Image (cartoon, rainbow, N blue to C red; front, side, top):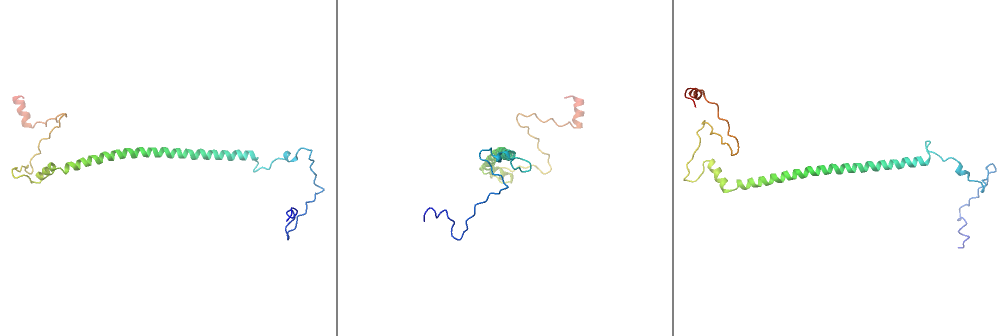
Length: 167
């Protein structure tokens, strides 16, 4: 195969004939300034290519700002949720420790003996003591460091005796 064979069309294909110049069409002068630059560019809806490119770039920038803003918002929300979960975790840890301490007390022999006494079980040398049904409750005990409860109001007999004999 020689170099001229590659320029010839393959068998079975017709070669295109060169286009004939239309006598009505003017021939551009190569020395004259290009008439293609003088023609207005085709536009889309009255906008030139530069305006369309600027609008597309603006849309891309706005989209990037919105995506970044959403990501920042989600990070802020996740940070707040993490802080809430940390405080809940600390509260639950404290609760677990308190319940473990309570379980240790409940399982101790001293507590079991106290509860057995409440049900009437005890050692043979202990004497069972209980309040009779319908008896008044015992006076309340004031914890140390608190003000004592005000005394109950005097009965009418106590008020009359105080008036007669003074206090």
